[in-house]
Every structure is written in structure tokens, then in C-alpha cells.
Length: 216
Length: 123
Image (cartoon, rainbow over all chains, first blue to last red; front, side, top):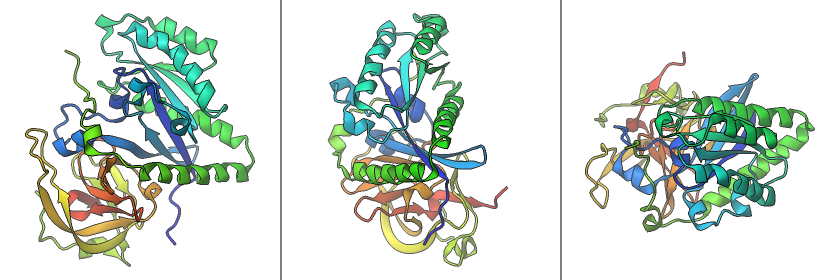
């Protein structure tokens, strides 16, 4: 039997309007010299990343909605087992900010009630095109008692920090539980992820995948 | 280009990876030592070509040395592509270089192609 290489497993989701840069937060694609046409055409489903927090090895499994939000089909199955959610808006698009409230409601309806949330105002490298002031992001986060950060996937500002903070918040919660409890949960999530990836997807349906183009 | 004539004997200890498995381009850690099993078989993996022309169907390269991983959460850092048929392709989690291997949906096994990664001693 292979030895276990981690202590905890956290499933995280990225949620928000289309075009706010969710895919870029997780998957850089774009003009990266190493990204092959083959991989960027198929698109990436999820990533596994290992971080160390307070001496614990934590595996993050991070999922993107893969465009489901465009068809308003984000449902319970996508949220199932999620322990953390990054709610993303674009600081240059007012509408995406207004919709944060809508997404929060969607999360309340479908996600586990103790899911840890964080709001990200993305594209902070495009300050000249900003329409949403940082204070507004801070305020809405405060109103809902959630963490907030401005990020730039393109310039790689605060991305790692945001994931670490979200993981830390989940760890705080997990630590408060009975030890057996968290193990159960990890096992359940592993099973669900396995089920999820057994779902099939045709090449055609992913050919329309967004690319992270640099701002024009 | 991967050197296909390379022998990987020095990388294997008791059937497992002796050293850290890393991305060739950005050095992101993919597997920590002694977490994957050395396995040899033939598989045609799409080539890692720069993002220029998009020939379809993708050009492949025959690979015969792999690190086999039973549980996907054994990976330190890795990306899984969307599913094509019965396969998910593996990429570097940081720079997205790939495919560096593949995941078989049916058996739930993941295979990292040795010629597509680098190996180094833990720091």
C-alpha cells in the first residue's frame, strides 16, 4: 500500500460571471511558451496543488466552472463537497460586481452551509479601466462576513496568497471538529471527485473554451 | 527534445522514483520521492509542441517509460485536462506544459512520462 502523502484534502471552487478571469486564476494558458495547442484546446479540468500550513501537508483540488455559469447551470452537483469558494468579479466590469450578490445567494441555496468563502476583485493590473472601487469590494465582503482581496491573474498578484488564506480559513474550521469527522469528509470528497471525473466530455464541447487573452 | 535512448535505471530504487520529479520548464514539483512506481509499456502521447500551429489530429510520440500513480492525490502539483474519450492528460500545475502524461478514467491510474519530466535531488 502506498503511503499517504498528505494530511488533509480541500476541494475549492471558482465562481463568478463569465469573463472575470476565473480560468486565468487557475489556468494561465495565454501566450505562455510552454502551453501546447493540444492542452489549451482540450482545457484543464482541475488542478491538484500541495501547500504546507502549520506543519500540515494540504492538498488543494481546485475546480473551475468551465463555462457552466454562462448557461446558469451551476447546480448542487458542482458545489457538492466543496469546502471553499473563490467568488470572483472583474474590477473593470460593474455588472460582474453586482452579480456577486446573486452568486452568494446561489451558494446559499446549493452549497454546504459551512463552506468558506472569499471574494476576489480580479484584474487589478487594469487600474486605468477600473469601474469598481476597492472600497466597494471591501464593504460587500464585510457585510457578508467574508474575506476580500484584489488580485491579478495576469500579473500574478495575490493569487497564491488568496488560496493560502482560504485554505487557512478552512483549516481553522476543520481544527475545531472531531478528528474522525474531518477524515470522513476527506474520504467522501475523494469519492465524489472520482465520480465526477468519470463523467465524459467530448472534444467538441470543449473546443469553445475561453482563452486568457492579455488585455487589449 | 527528450532523449529517448536515455536509461532511467539510476532514477529507480526498489521500483519507485528515487528522486523528486519536476517540470522540465519551470521546476514545479510533480512527485516527491518514492511515491510512484516505475513501469514500462508503450503509449502514444500527443507531443508537447509550442503554441503555434494546430494540426489535427495531434501528432504523437511513442513513450515507453512511466511513473505510475494509483491515487491522484499523491501528486504534489499537477493539472488534469478535460476528458477525451477515456483519458485525461496531465500537465504541469504551474506553467501548464503538457501533456506530461495521462490519467485513465477506467483504471483511475495516472502515468507520468519519464522523458517529459526532469529528476533532481530533494533540496
